[in-house]
Length: 97
Image (tube, rainbow, N blue to C red; front, side, top):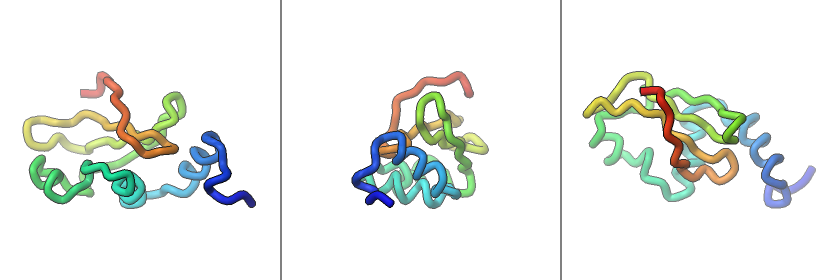
């Protein structure tokens, strides 16, 4: 089997799709990029908890979609998209509000 660093983009995406089963695992990958999305202070500011999240995979965008179950402070309820290879936050505008 190839080393992870030798995988191409499609293989890395497939690897992540198979291995990420929980929001906690997704959080760890996202936090490793330096993102403050799951930072304790950020989540507390918005009145958010890890229990408020679920996720799915969008094959059209090759991205993980982070979905809030309930709106948080200020009515914030938009979905957040993260690239399935790099876990960087993607600017995607949807009408799921």
